[in-house]
Length: 179
Image (tube, rainbow, N blue to C red; front, side, top):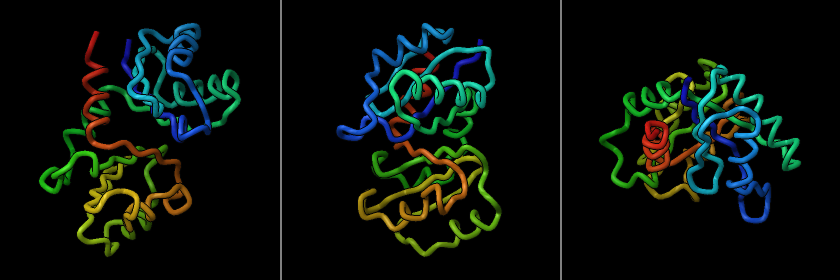
C-alpha cells in the first residue's frame, strides 16, 4: 500500500478554515485511509492508500468539505514523488535558513510561458526554480515582503499551489518513512 502526502491549503489560519487534526485523522481512518498522521496544524497529512494521488486529493477535498464545511484545495504527492522533490532541490546552496526556503506544490505543471516568466523574474537576492509540478523559492528577506512570493499565486501560475517550508517538506518525508 502506497504512502501519500496530502497538503491541504489554507486551513487553520487564525480563526478561518478550522480543521482539528485529531478529527481529521479520525475522518480519514473512518473512510479507509490507513495510518493517517498529521504534522503541525497547517494541513499536512501522511496516509496510506491503494488509490492514486489525484484520487486521494479529490476524495480528501470532498471529505473535508462535507465534515468541516470548508472547500480547500488539496495537493497530493506519493512518498516517492516527495523524495524526488527533495533530491532534485536546485537551490540547495542558497538555503541558509530552511524556514525561508519554500517548495510550492502544484496541482499540475504550469504553462511554459509561466515557467519562463518565473525563472527570468528580477527578484534578487531571492531565487526561483521550477521543476515540473514544484516551484522552489528562496525568500532571502522572509516571506512577508517577498517579491518572489507575489509571483506564486494561483492566478499567476494558472494552477493550484500550496507552499511548505523546507523543514516541513523534509519532516513529511521522515513521517512517511515511519511505520
